[in-house]
Image (cartoon, rainbow, N blue to C red; front, top):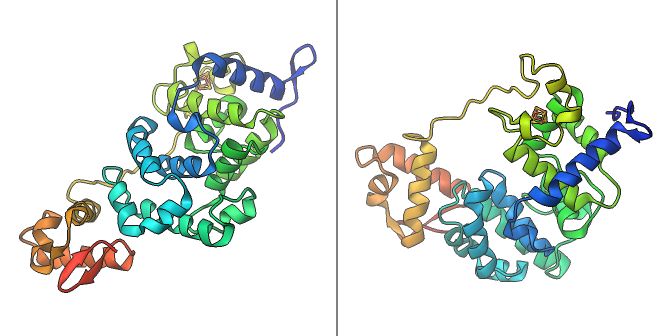
Length: 297
Ligand code: SF4
């Protein structure tokens, strides 16, 4: 998508003004997060996988523990999937631990233990998609790429075009706005404006650095909100996902004998459901049967 080119102040293009406002705000407001204090690609890859479905504030302590346990890909690969799952305790969406471990194995086997730098090589790793590859490229290697996650799509939809952007339109818009030589600062700051100012609910336009050029704010924030999406968060309490989580938590302490699977899943009266969920874990590589008990892989 073409970046708007109307001039806003003399010779400064709209794209340049956007970048300047973002970078100026970032200087004083960017959040201090541990994965921002490093350019180590393994640490950054680990943090990005953790951040995919978990808020930054919740990730901090888990991230510190994870990188202390597995300081590099060979350490994680060597420790094995069960150790990765144990170190993931409390983060949820446990499949991410297995995918990160599988990526560590591939990095160790194919790249001598060093995280590769190109999009092609990164995306060839298990569980690493275009978003994560771009994040590693920008934040570890300073590559000139725009990193677009949910918060950024919302921000660009409201501020730049005043209508809802598709994911590919948002990526193209972000690519067009990326200032030369500032991929790290610019992408990290956009994350923060999206997460802390241009929030999904109740965006704080009064303190937003992009307010002077925001398309939606200029239009009086008329409804519908350009970033409005239908959010259908599946109920967690009572769901199979809750039972899966309980079972994996129990396995972190040791094997669960088959007759105890139902109580470990939190459904003491429903062995059939618990067994189905346990088989699902086995199918997904998160557990295995060993001598009549469910255990970590
Ligand atoms: S002015 Fe308001 S709607 Fe526009 S980017 Fe800032 S917070 Fe979001």
